[in-house]
Image 1 (cartoon, rainbow, N blue to C red):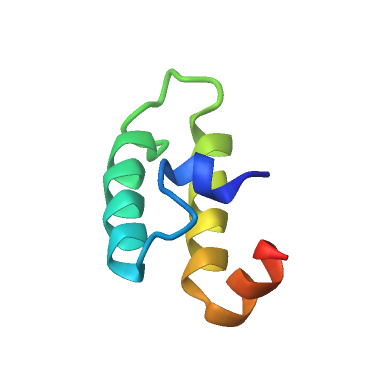
Image 2: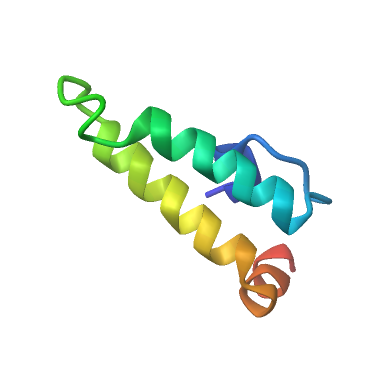
Amino acid sequence: KDYYKILGISRQATSATIRAAYRKLVRTWHPDRKPDHPKAEEIFLDIVEAYEVLMDEELRELYDQ
């Protein structure tokens, strides 16, 4: 998975940029906001996973290799 693409950010994104992108996307894709969208939960979970990896310096470094 391309976490940067999922969040719509560049590889040089700062933690503030990552956080802002995450917040915007979770508001849009939360399954409670899109109950009729068949992939809303899957997309939401991908967003959460991308955020968790990219916000953790060690995980992000491993991911970027």
